[in-house]
Image (cartoon, rainbow, N blue to C red; front, side):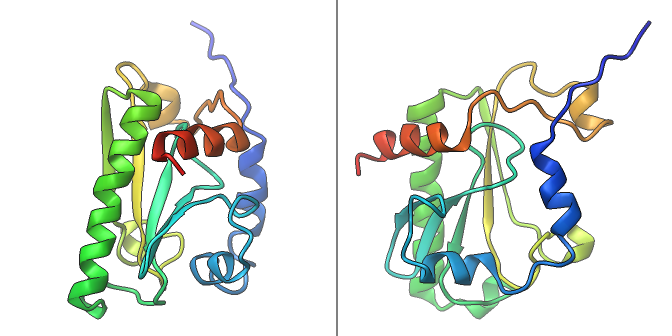
Amino acid sequence: MSVERIWAPWRLEYVETAAEQGGCIFCDKPAAQADEENLILHRGQTAFVILNLFPYSNGHLMVAPYKHVASLTELDQRELLELMTLTRDAAEWLTRAYHPSGMNIGVNLGRAAGAGIEGHIHIHLVPRWEGDTNFMAVLGDTRVIPEGLRRTYHRLKEAIGE
C-alpha cells in the first residue's frame, strides 16, 4: 500500500512564525478597524467572531472577547454571556452556510491543553462532515481545505445577513 502526500503549504507560514509573533491577534485585529482584511465576521459589544487564518476545515472560526484575558473566570457576566451567545450564533451561521454533519466547539486553556494563543481566551468552532476524519488528519496533521478564506468570509457574511 502506498501513502500519498497532500500538500498544505499555507500552514508553513504559521509553523515558521508561530513562536515569533508579537502582540495578540485578538487585540490587534479588532483594533485595526479593517474587518474584511482581518477576517472579522461579526462584532458584538464585548466579543467578536473571526475566521481562523490557519483553519482545520472550511468555516473554522473563533469567538473571542475584546478584553485580553486568559481564562473564563476573568470575564464578567455580561462578557461571558455575549461570548456564549456569539458561539451559539456562530454555530447557526456555520450550519446555514455549510450544512456540516457535526461541529467541534472547544476552548484550549494553556499551552499544555493546546492553546496556540494562551494569553487571550477564545472559542474554536470547527465544522465537521461524515468521513472527514481519516488517517491524514489524525496521524499526519494534514488537512485539505478546498475553499479559500475570502470565499469562506463572504459565504459566512451571507449566512449572518450582514
